[in-house]
Structures are given as structure tokens and as C-alpha cells.
Length: 257
Image 1: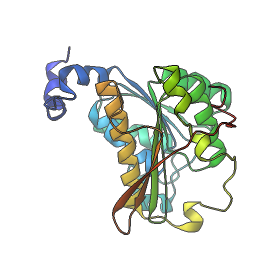
Image 2: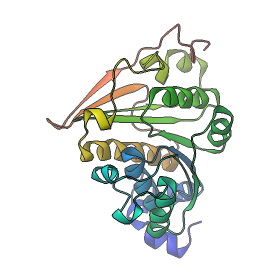
Image 3: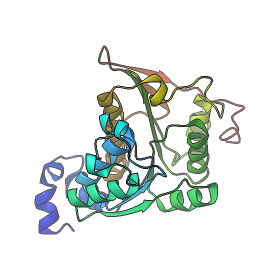
Image 4: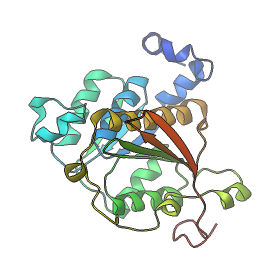
């Protein structure tokens, strides 16, 4: 049952029939793992903390640089050269002291990642490199943990949800994983913000979508967005396009299903 303090703070969410008081209680007991505290993680973590997610674990091994401030909205000028996880914890705690926040200021190896994913109700992949994305996908798939993935470069963004808590074997057989979409461990060409550029609000839009999907799952018990679909965002035309992700029968991660 919500306390009076929680009810008053989250009353705009509680008023929604899809969430109500029971959904807010579920949010307050939930555990979210956010890997990457850049532009995506900045936006997503702020909204998840403000929504009342009970536990947030933020992972990053980088420090705040001046060029980050154009799009990584959680940081301030006084955070320059401070560990991103440290600065993130400070901002989120000041935003909502009722949320438990734990920082991991390092790049996780597979064993550590397995432990963190095991503890989480949902994982947000906010990283910017393909090997890490593939490892996160593999571990989430192995542990049946929902994965919310996003990326952005230039004016373009993409978003996808993979619900590895699929209830039936028949449904699992038809569902693709992240590796089905990108069956390689390295990008064919450089696609880093530092080399290709990126518009800040585009990254924020995708991070917000990750937060919305997480709140859906945690508060209502299911994703209301269709899973295993690639949602493409064009920031110049302000348009979305949705594409099906075909299951790769030779996929190194999910082909055994």
C-alpha cells in the first residue's frame, strides 16, 4: 500500500486507470538496470526516478566531458571530469530521495553482467558499441529478462523492445532477438557521435521511449508497445516508421528455441 507521501507525489500516475495505486506499488518495488549513462541513459534515468521506480542501478565507466553537455541532460558544468555514475546518482537522488540508486563505475564483464541482469526486472541498453550490445542481449535472453534497446546518430534514432519473458514456446519460436537484427559484433563503419554528430533532442526522444516502455512493463505487467519490432525515428521529418524483425534461424543466441 502506498504511503500518503507516495500517493501525493505520484497522484498524476495513480490517476491513470492502466497504472492506478496497484501499478504504482509495483513500480516502487521494481528494479531497473540501466547500462550506459550517456544521452539515452540520462533521459531514461531521470524519468524512471521521477516515476518512482524502487531501485535503479546505473552502469558506466566514463567521466563527464564538456562535449557531453549538448545532449546528456542529467549533467551540469560542475560535473566535468566527475565519473558519470557519481554525477548521475547525485542528480537522481536530488530529484527523488525515495528511489534507491546504486552506481557501478566500470565496464561489466560477463559474470558481473549476469549477476546484475539476474537481479533486474528490466534492462535498458543505453550503450554505444556493438560488442556490449550483443553481450547484453545474450545475457538478457539467457535469463529471460526483458530488454529495451535504443540508439541514435545524427537526426536518426531506433528503438526496440525484446520481451524474453515470453509465456509460450510457440510464441518464443517466432520472436526475434537483438542479434537477429544485427548478426555481427562490430559495426561495418564508424557510427559514433564524436565522428558522425548527433542532435541532442533526438537522443532524448529515444531515451524517453525507453523509459515509457519500462514503466509500461513494470506498472501494468506487460508491454503495450509491440515487441520484436524496430521503430525508426526521423528527427528531420519528425516521423516514425515500424519494421518487423525476422527471426534468424541461424542466430547464435536464440536459434536453439
